[in-house]
Length: 416
Ligand code: ATP
Ligand code: MG
Image: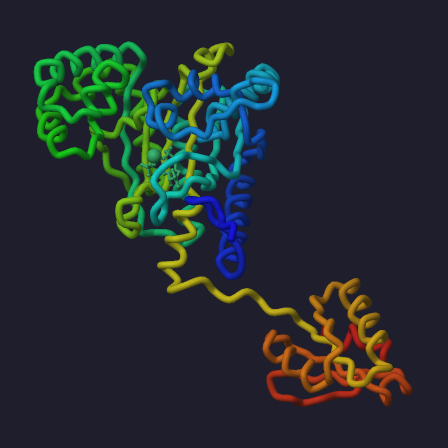
């Protein structure tokens, strides 16, 4: 038997109904903040991620689905959305036409990771990118949109952590100080971190390895290397979050691991999902446009993992709520009523009701049983007598009471 690909999931039934609810809230919140949806293809040139995410990242290093197409081009299933959005913004000259672009996206991503609860090889993100503003108000708006979306979904068991990486100059100064400190202690670092020392030294700060942690505990602090501009930028972000009543903690070690971040970085985590605790990640990525060959453009964004939201909602609500049943089941009581029953179903669907009908040509009794199982509000019974006097018997399923209703009054009767 052929099975679904490892780390990928079929979505259906009551779980899918919860996905639809999440998707509705996402759209509603993006609308409220004035963001426009943007859709890009699922595959991009591999080079985009190599340049945009960076060769030193786990994503490019070991998680990408990369293949040659039949023409010999190296393509990659997108592992994240920021690089594709920036690629598209450069390609369509978005920022030149409009000084700030507020964009959001929703869709599947692919990473070759070890599958476990909350970690899949195909997963979905909702995210937003605010292009063209270097101001801290933009950072705050992006964080607010992420935070309020979770709140609107009723997800409150989450915490926001913030940090600032400062300007490119202050980050470089810090990087040098950090590398110097770590270089002297290199042999005590984990293998992964030894490799990162040249490629991506800031990443070592959020390593979970106990040996790395022991060493980085004494490392120089980023906040001691921030210039005045960086400090002021961060202070304004915090001021706005404070004013909006968004709780957060500042985490000195939060670096988000990618080369392109500057100034604000943030993460929203939960204690309810075991080790897959990150729900949202984001930050300012002013260097990225230039890295991808565009005109320098300040930008900030976030992405939220939708599978983890759905898992949280399932926990919170003690399972997935049942899907709403159809309203009507049309029952044919005799053979001569089978076609008229189908026509009645068609007519009521056109009038906006959700309607089921029998497709197995079973007995009236069997159809009524199915109607009860489906949980419909009304069964409409159609037999030889009803055909003759152009009526329908409307049976209220909750108490079994019945009313004979003329054909022409049926819709208004059901709406009353
Ligand atoms: P993690 O530390 O859990 O690997 P990450 O830092 O790789 O997360 P990001 O690249 O920042 O994650 O992606 C943003 C969000 O996407 C994460 O916070 C998480 O909710 C979700 N996410 C990331 N990878 C996966 C995955 N393999 N399966 C499901 N959700 C994921
Ligand atoms: Mg990851």
